[in-house]
Each structure stands twice: as structure tokens, then as C-alpha cells.
Amino acid sequence: MKTVYTCFCTDVIHDGHLNIIKEAKKRGKVIVGCLSDEALIRYNKFPTISQEERIKLYKDIDGVEEVVIQNNMLYDDVIPIIQPDYVVHGDNWLNGPERAIRDNVEELLKVYGGELVDIPYTRNEKVKKIDVQLREKLAMPEYRRKRLRQLISIAPVVKVLEAHSGLTGLIVEKTVIEHDGKLDQFDAMWISSLCDSLSKGKPDIELVDMTSRFRTIDDIMEVTTKPIIFDGDTGGLTEHFVYTVRTLERMGVSAVIIEDKKGLKKNSLFGTEVEQTQATIEEFCEKIAAGKKAQLTDDFMIIARIESLILEKGMEDALKRSRAFVRAGADGIMIHSRKKDPAEILEFCDRFREEDKVTPIVVVPSSFNTITEEELIKHGVNIVIYANQLTRSAFPAMQQTAEDILKYHRAKEVDDRLMPINNIITLINEL
Ligand code: SPV
Ligand code: MG
Image 1 (cartoon, rainbow, N blue to C red):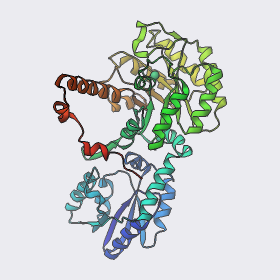
Image 2: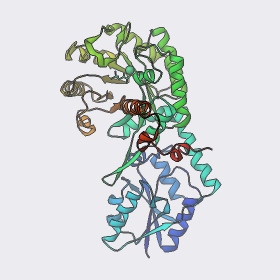
Image 3: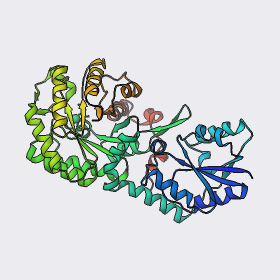
Image 4: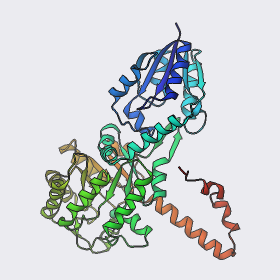
């Protein structure tokens, strides 16, 4: 009896999957691979049911003999072991970034003479609707909110990119690259106070009010499913912060990061060039505790951001604060620095991790940008936020275009740098 292997990465079985199984069964004994949670989240198919539930779902399909776990998007851990006579898959992987996976399977099969079968992808209204329903489910507050904690527990590091509009949200949501035969993408979005303010032409001094910041979140939520970390600045007055927590939680935001400053807040990257005042440990602990008391779900996270290194108050002060803030209920610690050298950040992480193995650490490597995610993982970092790079790449490009149109009194000279009109009008699909 020949063996046929196919890998599933779905939470719902539709006609397309049943057709794959039907085609597989014609060729022999069907083994289904269940893509592990860890691999799924890299693949933008964030699971809405557990790995165990998916295994059961696949086992229950008529014609499936066996279900195995596949730990990677690439098939290296299963094909050499199972050595199936056939691998079957929908032909949708012939194009786009998934092509890299198909190439990988072809190579693995060549080794012993296995055969690859591309089954025409089933496109009908029912299948389309199920895909949309799955996506919409992920966008619901109760799913989106808990997704950050799930990611922290599954992913080696959670990679976060700034978004400040529906369009930038879509970039974070949809950008997938294939590199070295692997697919990769961002896990979550950061609603930066700097970039949200800049996009409104305002300074980053808590001038853009919460109603407006919530509006930004809502615009992004309308068109995305990935979890959101909100830059809550100082959190404002404790009496106000408790309301902010409730609103963010209700909207489906996963975490708020508040920094231990008081009075007029300025952007941290100014450091000591401008006057900024750090809140006392007692004041900030009180704010964290009040926020934790106000929150209603177990999913939401309040992350305390320590500004001691930014304000040159020293490592001991930063560590002392981290201990106090965790005791007050903080669900994570963000440590910030504006030095180019990551040494002080790494020292903090190492010393913090000596005492505390579990509380998530967040870093924002804008200045210390030579450090890689891999190195940060080794020092116990859980979340890496790329806080402003989208805005910083867009602004100079737009300004140059504006200058050149003025210079040439027409737009022809800038056209080579622009997205073709046909691409921009079709960028967003209508329903
Ligand atoms: C932001 O993105 O608004 C931040 C990070 O708070 S930083 O600009 O580095 O202070
Ligand atoms: Mg900020």
C-alpha cells in the first residue's frame, strides 16, 4: 500500500480540504500533518483552537488513517521519516511566498523518488466565506486580546512593528517575506505615541488626547487581526488611567505600556536634553496597581516602562524599580535606552533574569539597532518593538517627492519612484 502525505494548517475543514483527502485516498493510505502552533503563528494562520483539537478534527475526517505533528512550515522533519510515495497539496502554493515551501518539498522527495501532486484549489463561495469567517474571528476582541499572551508563550520572541493608520496596520498585518527558504512576518502592532502624534502633525507630549488615540486604534482594528500593544505614555492621572485600561480592554487591545514619568512628558529619545521628571516608585506602583484592579479579563497586560537609563539614574535604580513594579502587579517590564551600544540594555536584562525568570521583558531597539533578535532572545527578551521605522522611512520619501514636483513643475520626474497607479487603486480589495 502506498502512503500519501498532506499537511493541514486550518481550524475548519471545508470542501477544499475534503477534496484533498479524496484525491490523496485515491493514491494510498493518507497521513495528515498537523502544523504545530509554533509553526502556524509564523504562517499567519493564528490558531483559534488548540493543537489537540486540530489533531482530533483531522483524525475525524473520513479517509484519514493517521495524524502526525509537523513542527516546521518546511517539511524537513516529516518527509525523510515518513518517506511518503506522494505529497498532495492545493495548487495555491505554486505562486507567492508559499512557493518556497513547495520547492522544499520537491527537494526532499527527489532524494528517494517521491512524487508531488498539486491539486486544483477549490474556489467556491462556501470556502471563501469560511476563510473570511476565520479571519473575522481573529479580529474579535476576545480573540485578539489574548493573542499577545499566547504569542509570548509560544514564540521565541514577539516581533512588533509600529502602525498609526489603517494603511500602516495593513503593512504590519500582511507583510510576509521568504528568506533562506523560510517565511517570516511580524506578530503584533505598536501604537506609538510618537508616530500617532507625528501623523497628526503634533509633538509627542501627550497632546493628542485619548479619544483621538482610540480612534487610531479603531481604524487599525477595522482592517487587521494581529494583536495590539498601545503606547500609553505616562498613563496620565491614575484616576484617568483606570478608564483607559477598561476601554483598551473592551476594544481588544492586548497590552498597554506606561512609562514611569510625570508632569510634561517628552519623547524618551531626547534623554536629558530636555526636562523630564521620573515618578517616584510609590507613585508609579500605585498607578500600576489601580490599573490591574480595574481590568476585567486575565488576558490584558499592563507593562511598566522604566526610564532610569534614559534619564541617567543608573542601573541600580532601574533594577530597583523593576522589582517594585512587578510586585505592584506589572505583567511585563519595558527597559529603554537611547545609547547606540546595547550594553546597558543587556546588563539590565541579564540581571533582571537572574532574579525573575518569567516576567516578560520588552525592548525598543531604535538607538541600539545593531543588536539582532537572536541576541536579544539569549538575554531573555520576549518582545522586540520596532517603534518608528515605518514613519521614518515614509516621511523622507514623501518630502523628496514634494520637493521634486516643485522643482520640475510636473510629476514625471518622480514617477519612477512611485507605485504604479493601477497598483494603488487596487491595493485595497472591495468586499
Ligand atoms: C514611541 O514609539 O512613542 C515610544 C518609543 O514611546 S520612543 O520613541 O523610543 O520613546
Ligand atoms: Mg511613546
